[in-house]
Length: 114
Image (cartoon, rainbow, N blue to C red; front, side):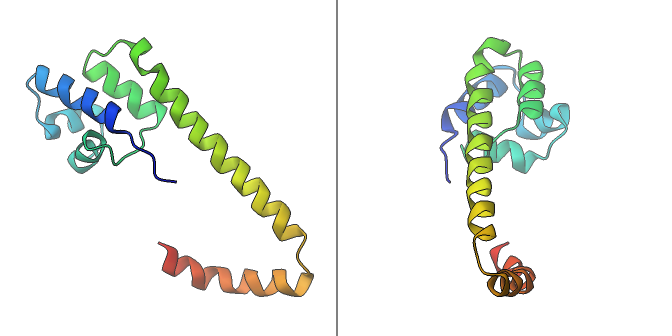
């Protein structure tokens, strides 16, 4: 589920530059890595509410401007929860032997997913 967070990234970059901050300086103020700030600014990172709030404080962004981004985050979380519930329901419908086999294979599959 790739989502474009470019508008938020553009806002963060513009505000950071407005205050003459480097990505590293902003990262230090927010308590994240410079690499994460770069990902936010390029639209490649989803930003949770805590980090979003810290960014708003560090860059003097009115909290009202960030409500839309917070709502987007929670909508994404809700979608993931729905998908997980569907998967749990589907798993429960499987025959016991299939469930046991899948549970044995899960650690092996997990190595390749990451």
